Image 1 (cartoon, rainbow, N blue to C red):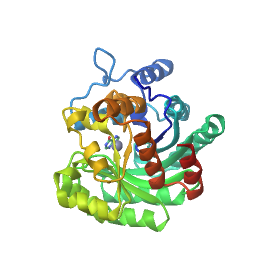
Image 2 (image 1 turned 45 degrees about the horizontal axis):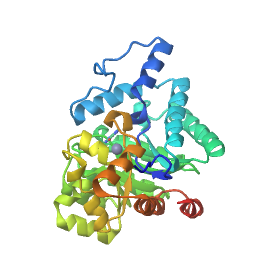
Image 3 (image 1 turned 60 degrees about the horizontal axis):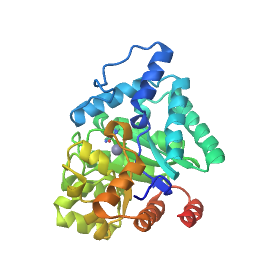
Image 4 (image 1 turned 90 degrees about the vertical axis):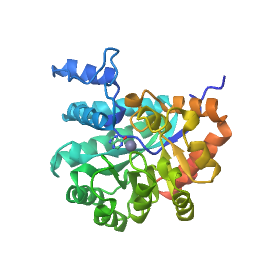
Amino acid sequence: MSSFASCKKVELHLHLEGAASPHFVRDICKSSGTQMPEIFDKAGNYNWQNFDQFLTIYEIVTNLFLGEKHFEALVRHVLDKQVKENVIYTEIFLGPHLWSDRPNDRWERFLNIAIKVANEYEKKYGVYTYFIIVCIRHLGPEKALEASRFASKVKDKNVVGFGMAGDETKFNTLDFMRSFDFAKNSGLGTTTHAGEICGAESVDEAIKLGVTRIGHGVRSCESEETIINLSKKNILLEVCPGSNIALGLYSSLDDHPINFLFNKDIPVSISTDDPPFFSTSLTKEYQDLHNVFGWGFEIFSQINKKSLEFAFCEAKLKEKLIQQL
Ligand code: HPA
Ligand code: ZN
């Protein structure tokens, strides 16, 4: 059996707090004397049954990391895992509204901690970590503009993008046009979640926002026209197969459209979204794709090169990393 642990990887779609393992969360609670929230099942895994419950638990977990020391430990925990998975380049979503409900100095302090740890891991392990500031869709367009303004203000070597996470069913996508225009005009890359909880029409709306990447976007397969549009616009889908299966979009990987999209020449990347919530890891995703679709090192290398082409970092770094794949 091939082992994909050693395969060099690029990950574009990962939520910081969504990568906190249950055991790490429990350790943090114990060491700080914080009461353990009721978010685990008997086996010790996150206990959610649907997307709404997932988002609720995600926010509870986020609230456990509001102290600087714990937040720094979280960034280290997540980057340790990226190192272990042989990730050479990763972009990570940071949602500042989860840290405080309006812009305040914690936004900058936390971002600086994340950047400090990223730089340390780059030097020590050669993993390049870049950040995408996300607005939380269900908080609405005004809050989104706060996040976009913040992203533009802190645009830097390590802050390269603006995106939107949260509940896809809330508000109209085009209500967020101002935030995305603001970010684009500041030179940030843009991406939004779409075509995960909602259907192909949500991908059509995301395309109108002018993004170059879409988080998930897999339900674009429900409309031939949407697929044609994605192809014409050359938009990359940040596909997270294990997340889609855990959330019940597809009953198994055999039914997942990633192979169809790849064969249609739609640019795709492979990510884990919120790995411990969905009982996955990047190596597991690669192994499962190998088992079900026969994908091997050659295809993973091709996909990772494509992911780097669509990454939001500077061109020079992309060229350097593409040589490593
Ligand atoms: N989807 C949407 N919003 C999120 C997610 C997700 O997987 N994780 C954290 N916020
Ligand atoms: Zn996501």
